[in-house]
Length: 121
Image 1 (spheres, rainbow, N blue to C red):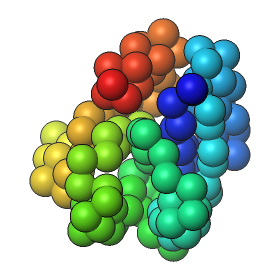
Image 2 (cartoon, rainbow, N blue to C red):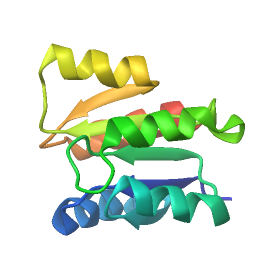
Image 3 (tube, one colour):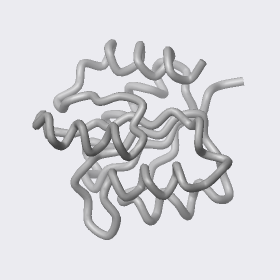
């Protein structure tokens, strides 16, 4: 059975690029445009990995990670940050919130697939 991944980004183009890349590699992908919509969707349809942007309206990536880590069912869920931010302070904030890893946009499709395969188990 295919591993399920949710990509969370306010950019439709970025969500589509990530989804296309992962579907081509055999993953089942769902999308959300902000952290709040992701939380709602994950209540009814859990996934194996979440890939989230940092800067989004309504609920940003760090707030999403904190909310997921507060849920006992999501404590060990792999969560990857995929963002244009490369600032070490932002990386530390994501790591302290519970991010599993950090990828910088624009992403290398092969590297994204490799990282997702590694963390999805």
